[in-house]
Image 1 (cartoon, protein in one colour):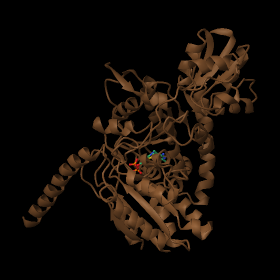
Image 2 (cartoon, helix red, strand yellow; image 1 turned 90 degrees about the vertical axis):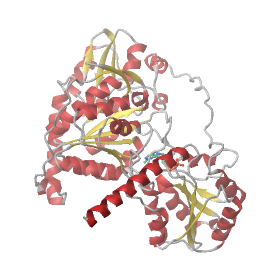
Image 3 (spheres, protein in one colour; image 1 turned 120 degrees about the horizontal axis):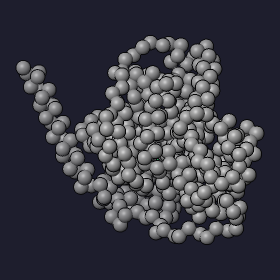
Length: 541
Ligand SMILES: Cc1ncc(C[n+]2csc(CCOP(=O)(O)OP(=O)(O)O)c2C)c(N)n1
């Protein structure tokens, strides 16, 4: 067995390859992005979807077809994918479906720190929670096994530290060879009309009861006996911190966080004098155990926020709620010096626009010197929020409202905002600026359907942003504000002055990605040319 130094994300990618995953799909988002990139580099079939909902649906289809599929996303991505997720729990799958939710306690790179263990409870799906890269590798096989055994999607919750820390990982010497995909018709099981969904819900609850019984004996949940005066129930990366914070205590480490092994935990809690749940984020395990009648201590409320580490866990154990020292200040993020967005934000600031913003590198327009963003909520929200503002504000303010959105975000979910704009136009009109830097820059330069290149930068179908918006009847202009800042300002002033709907595509490649984009595009172009020549040759022949 060879050992490799891998991050948790890379370990999942390797496990996916070794488990015979036929298709990996997802949407970029820190800290999950590297999984699909690494899976692709290992020779797996990896692809970016326009957003997480579509990714989940594609993975679900692959698993309905009997294949093994992997879907990856960051925690907030699961909000986007939640609609199919909940009903996929009813339909179940024929092959295997592992859905990675990479949570970000402490918000290293996210807009919130929601705890997606709650999704497992709400959707009624099993969830595994690895603590380090080796467990990420090993648990992945368990996830596939559970998914196939109970015919259910399995949630795989990682957190930033698990995704990005590196440690030695032993892989399997022989990859698994799953059964080949094959479609078997099961209309009552897959078509969720109420008549079929009612029994499907009961079936799901019965499966969960079986999985709970499995968890009572599974080695995914482990007991380490130690001192009787202190018992710690923990999961994920906290289990490593807790072991360091309190060596010698008794530990119950939960790997299958939903459904919980309640009876084993009841016995554990009764076997120690003080039993405390040490978990990052919300008190999900503590609440569930208390609801089941166990006497367990939960962490003080102040430790719901941010990541836990050894020091913070020592405080939890000591019931120390004194004010914590502030985290060391990092360098605030800022737009790159030569970022093409500078003239756009300078103009928005100069014109005192009310800016409904969105998520991407361009959110940094909120920082000094521009402070030119007034709202930022969720991916794709800028257009809807801008429209809402336009609908209610007094005329003088309404006509200064602009929505601003990146190209990847536009494709992800902004496009439905444009439909809303065409359908329910505000009396004052509206202006949307699409900042098209030709890449998903924020998460490390991933391709998307608007670039016309696949995850591996090969030529594929290309969605035209202006083609899409023009097809919806919205006047669309294209400009490079970096090359022509005065022209951009004139255009924006002109568009703000009319009660029409308009889109301005501000197009110039990301300065960090420009050289790569040129090289990828050159290679993609030559493959497009040779593909079309091959087509001609066949026709001629
Ligand atoms: C639902 C959701 N999925 C993924 C992310 C992670 N994420 C943040 S911004 C972004 C895309 C940014 O790309 P783009 O819109 O092209 O703007 P750029 O960073 O290139 O300026 C992604 C994928 C997120 N915040 N929310």
